[in-house]
Length: 114
Length: 110
Image (cartoon, rainbow over all chains, first blue to last red):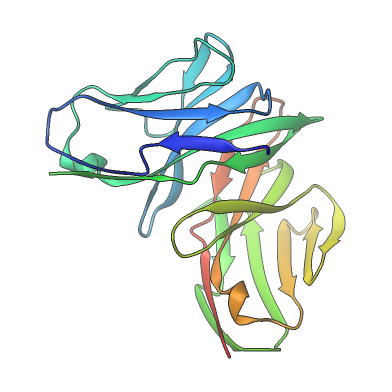
């Protein structure tokens, strides 16, 4: 089954404790991205990757890191989480259709930083 | 002004009603996406369109590129259609990112 998986689905942590949210897709997609979703603000892109070893900042990259060492995996790293990073996070992968990308989303990770 | 505006902000309907959700955007785009998010969070892509009209089951999506406007129609609505519907536009160029609307919360009452 074609899917994007994220782990963990729920995480409660404390300020400053490094964490990683994993994302994996089994569709051989080149394009992967991370979004955060906050009430009243909608989905905002954190980072994206066009292919292995190619990553770039989205709209709200501060406080986050990513890596793309393999095509299927795109982990999101919070080196020193802060309460303002409490949010719902989605990983997505895309398959190009010409210049358009059909989006496949992971199930989401709800992060709480206290 | 947001690049992507959705209306109405919230919508309540009775089961069986015909529902229209609108999306307006202010930039040139290569495609427009309609997404559905159920309570519990998962996001599903419903449509990706760059012109005309697409239909899938009871859902119909239309886009007018000249007017920079898209509509999502739900025919014979059902309580299981209750969800947040998100419009997103993809800019011009192969590497362009998605810009999202804030979403419309639809509640269909039995």
